[in-house]
Image (tube, rainbow, N blue to C red):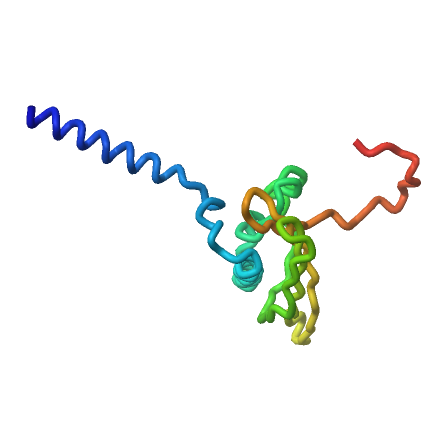
Length: 149
């Protein structure tokens, strides 16, 4: 009887551990203010850019972007060395859907300091803010009559 009780207790503990591991991050984030969460995401993104950890930035992008651009393609893109940054503005434009951030950053190229402002779009996907990197470049030779697939 004592052995059977121990076996049931071990099974109950294992089941509890298994089910507690099934809690998704989006469930944990429900108590966090969406604007605070967005600020944390923007901060983490730019810290990763400073450290040249572009894989971290890729992981923050929308699923639509990740379906179009592979991780390897993203990591092969030329980047600039960011020295410092400052978050200027974070604004939720459509609660639970869209937001914008504005970040000033500096870089040094060939001994010359440059300052830029980056305006980014963020989308709320599956309980988390995701960086919306839409392809901006278009084919200059496309007339518009061709169908895109």
